[in-house]
Length: 421
Image (cartoon, rainbow, N blue to C red):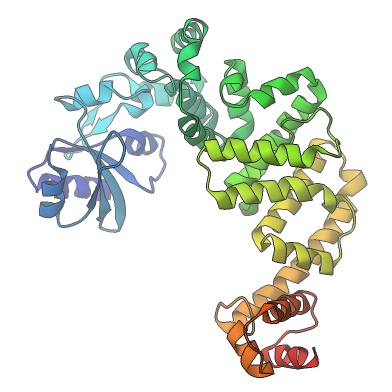
């Protein structure tokens, strides 16, 4: 706490009254260490505050401009008060556990019982104020995200108010822009995808943001398969670094949308289109979309023996990370289907073959101080007296395959291989 109070004091030395708020206070109350601190400042001129403070830049994008910077090695973001007082600001926050503030003297401002709700593991609308939902219906999804991630129950009155709102004002949910849905969905599935999707389903929200998943219920086996995969992924997320990516969980969520059977042979093109459409609307970056599609299209191929040469081709076509993730994804699907006895030995052998390929590519980086190849295109042209053209690219691709399959393991070996071509 001492470091955070120091930051509050540095802000207040500029003449700006400042409080710790939001996720920072909630995490501190839960005994967690925030990576980023959130502040509320009583200032209408953030540029002046930044100038006097001597650090930070003003981000004016979005409805709430923020001063972002770093003090004593701790990154911060500071927002202006919403209202005339800190109490007014806290009343605007959607959940009681986020509506707590800490003053520079260490005093706590908690007008809505947020600390009580944290201790009792309860999610409650701030002040039991249902108008907060009317102001922004997406707060419902945020509420479910916190409930899933923090493993907290939703307070009975909040649940009743939310269900009444959804029953009487469903059109408000349909008006939410897709990119706003996307932001909350990505946050919701990042840590507890199974619990989050189950909660969304229990509040009948799937038709608003993922209609094809709702439609899967007509094919009960397929819908349950998606949930089982997400359940396995959720159990492993905290301990498996490879799985801690948006692409991994999105593949579990979207891998079978639009299909009627688990093993439909012509599903890839249709699924690819739906995945691309959804993730583009959700404003997911193109690299992640490509990785999701690669996982969905390749993981089933890993249920049969894959040679080092084939793995090398996949790594060069997609990326090392994408192939690693696809293999881990295949293991999760196998576990969800209780098919370990049938596939475990094959997957273990494939894991070994992939590790050998990745070890060789990593050996290149160690020898070349981070370069992905022993030689550049310019060096190939100089060595073989070639002009720029397709042949140079073909030689580099062939050299990559030779490295990945163990035929070349040094700069000298690369030169000999090229001369032999």
